[in-house]
Image 1 (cartoon, one colour):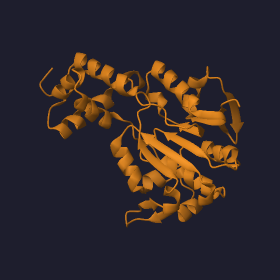
Image 2: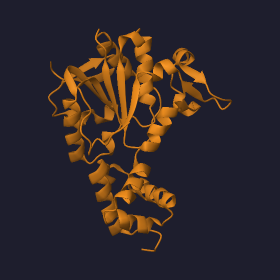
Image 3: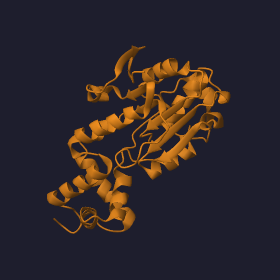
Image 4: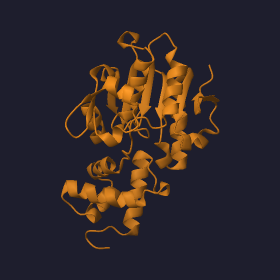
Amino acid sequence: MTDGAPGPAALAAVARALAAETGLSLASGLGDALRAALDRAADDRGTTPARLATAVAGGDAAALAALVEQAAVRETSFWRHPEQLAALARLAGGRPAPLRLWSAGCASGEEAYGLAMLLREAGRDAAAGDRILATDLSARALEAARRARYGPRALRRVPPAIAARWLLPAGPDGARVVHPEVRAPVELRHHNLVRDPLPGPSFDAVLCRNVLIYFDPAVAATVLRALLAAVRPGGWLVLGPVELPLAAELPVEWVEDGGATLLRRPP
């Protein structure tokens, strides 16, 4: 090992610390991402990756927090798996009472704002009183969500008619900003799915899509049980399609709707 590059033993210790804090696992293919995150976090702190790794492995909370911020997976866009969002809007949107929804692992807010757009499209206006809690581990991602300004890549799947109604032009680069009416029901909050207590009270639906695939399997199973506990009886748990096998042992009803699979907590 040089002073700049951590060796295998140091990387393994860092990976264990990261998994304990966040659930993120090297087994999910994040080895190269971990090295890159160490590099970025070291740059932020004016040190070398090796020294940062030593600090993380030694229990330095500030060093670990810097690494967590860089390691958090932020890849997302509007309208990922749109069939799931459309199914949820149909199945939950008929409820007359105000809806409480939780976008867990919301990254920079695309899922939460997209869901708010669909509720508006379904005729649920501000008078419905719906609320969407959007949480993430990354403070930087939440800052981006608060700005609610997105470039063409993030917006590429949004249907043009919906974009015209709910996304306002924000510059010559093709960026758009989310309409205030869509932003209004969304509350952004920092939350660690592994460490923090569940937000409450219970939700009509919890969405946690393309998050658990990066977790250690045992941690993912624990988080899944907690997420289901946050759903009201008769409510919905929405996972990414590739994560559905993780729910094989959950006491839920599997519901197919419009090409999407949603999990319903029995009443």
